Amino acid sequence: MEEILLLNMIKNLVAEKNGNKMKILKQGAEAKPFFFVNTKIGKQFWCAKFPWKFERKKALRERKNNMQNLKEKMIIQQGAEAIIYRDGDKLIKERIPKCYRIKEIDDKIRKLRTRSEGRLLMKAENTPNVFLVDCDKYIIEMEFIDGELVKDVLNGLNVHERKELCREIGVNVAGLHDNNVIHGDLTTSNMIVKEKLYFIDFGLGFSSQRVEDKAVDLHLLRQALEGKHYLIADECFDFVLDGYKNSPEYEKVFKQLRKVEMRGRYKRKNGL
Image 1 (cartoon, helix red, strand yellow):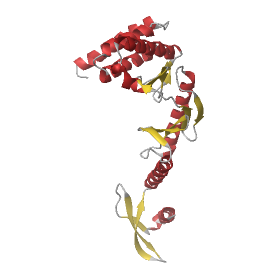
Image 2 (spheres, rainbow, N blue to C red; image 1 turned 135 degrees about the vertical axis):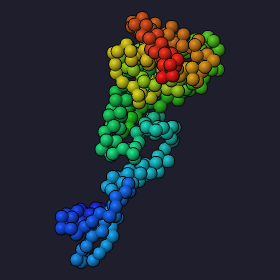
Image 3 (spheres, rainbow, N blue to C red; image 1 turned 180 degrees about the horizontal axis):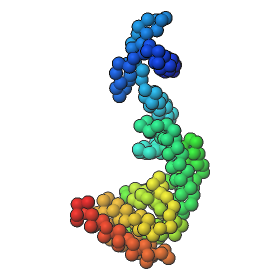
Image 4 (cartoon, rainbow, N blue to C red; image 1 turned 90 degrees about the horizontal axis):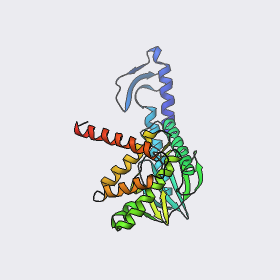
């Protein structure tokens, strides 16, 4: 309330500016000190904060309240984009506000990303069942998969088990790409094993028919294997490609993958 009153008073002062009754002494990043003359209250100094500072404080208060509400729920993971928590047999992904963005822009971005990820989850195969996509509340409710992340089990498997799992990854990535779904973040952290393989977290995903996009998706998977499973990365990726041969576009994607890898080697060689 005090902020609103202060803003209204500033507007009145600005209206009197032409009458030489107000003078801006200084303007900084946080505030504008004014000196003005008013017949009722005499000479006064006022410090007027910028309106977007108030919006930032409001967003911070809302975020704090949301976090307090989430304490009663089982938070599984909190990232830069969203909070993931469990509610019974459901998993809920809620995109959180960004205080550094203008509220209208932040709301639009979160709404678009929520809608996009919801569509991809429903379009793709081997993903958790989606129960609800609420763009106004920025949440996606989906099936909770009580399995293990591939990143936690891959290194401990024997050669035969590793081959079977990586071939299954390749078969399912081919299924995504044949359906023109690009995951955008194909890492073993975004795969769950429970009787079968599930893909999760399509926050960076999009739809595309381009062979280049599919090749880059595979290249990112190779980089993820080299980063987290470096001792068995080459072997695992060969098994993945073996499974990917199920795709009718295998030859085109494989050829483009080699070009993508050559570009990466050229940049590293030349320090780009």
